[in-house]
Image: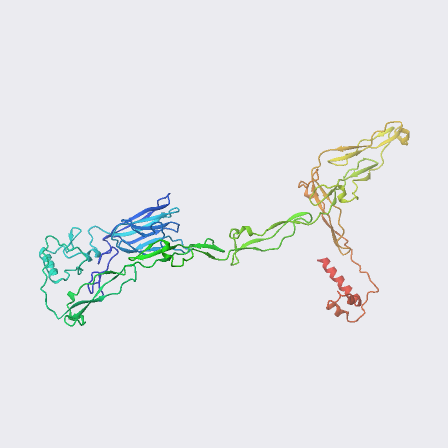
Length: 624
């Protein structure tokens, strides 16, 4: 059978959350809250007071921080993290209960520190926070008994008939006669009355209530056997103040031989009392704290831990001067660490072609930050100082210089007779900047070409015709007019030799003209050589839009842009027949299949077959 919390065999009573034996969880009060005050000064700040008698104590930091929780008694004794010394997580005794101090150290954990204890406390305790960074919030919770509640702990330390909170711990229907009977029975037999447990001597004050009659001791009886102390239990610790208890056995009074305990009166067996032992201090030791988080999330970093010299006495571990641990080698306080391999830069593509065909341009390539698992991640995860260039300048050498020409003007400089048409000519590089004319060589294309719109009518003396239209529609041009020596006849003019008018001042026959700014116009180079001599090739030229000052422009009419590419040499190819190119062997097809035509010997010995294959390959490449 089981024993209930009331120490009776067969009882099914259990202690409820209020600590009441056989209670229904209604005789206590849960106290909880969150400390969220904003703190400014570094150091110890009081958070909450834990009263005497509190149970189920839970003090928890709401999220991980660089702050620490601390605990001390109202008398000023430090229990955890006192005097600016940070204790390692573990179990610490204080206030009559055992506190479990937890400080999660996993890098992925976001949980904060905590104090946990079952209680009950036998004194008032104060909880502090060592403030170093903004307070994330401290949750506190504990249970205290309600008013006029008799707890199992109080019953266990109460003598029968002794008042408790101003009341007697007896049923309400118990009358004074029954009370006296219970007191008398307890006095005479030493047994517990009612439901109260046996009172252990020495645990309570020896004084008795004034209205209580001193107990009458039973007459001493002569027995053959009695209880004798034969020794003590082993000390609970080898140093630092432990405890041990006397051991009593039943012996023969005369021979002192040990006999079965059934020969002795169990009610007279002395109750072992605790005795201190091994009071000398334990040797000091190095208390090694947990490693801190690695200083780097990847690659080689550093981590630290706290090393304290501590000494144990009276079930308490105290921090002492480090010279007390001089006999021991001090563990390292710092160490290298590496959580994972850092991401690295990878060049994913080759350099692109240069952005210009000649001169200085730029080229690019794809550079990515790749994790150790092969995934592309943000550039910030790689060392930016080691990032390879993804863009650089490229020099394609000097640009070829070419003559750029406009189309011939549509108008002839003379309305009749000989005149000229004009065009603009400029030497340009790929960067569209003017260069001295020597850059394009001395073969400058002509800027004028002759034109003739038919004969003109004559005039007497120097006859000056009207000025022609300007040779250009815009920009600088020329105007022409006919100046001849004529003689007027009836209804006609006879043209004379100019020398006949030489004594007269001859009017000018040409002058410059400027109608308006041209704006932007299309310029182009000469056509290149045809890519093929037969079976259809193509030729190209470069076309640029230039403004009046010969700089690049985008204002030209796209519909008037000259062609940049056109077909040429579209006639069929006629192979030349060389009488000396013949196959000297009947099996030249084997030479062709074995691709031996690249060698001079076979190329000569099987000339016809090798030439035929070469022509087919060049034709195939031309079609591509």
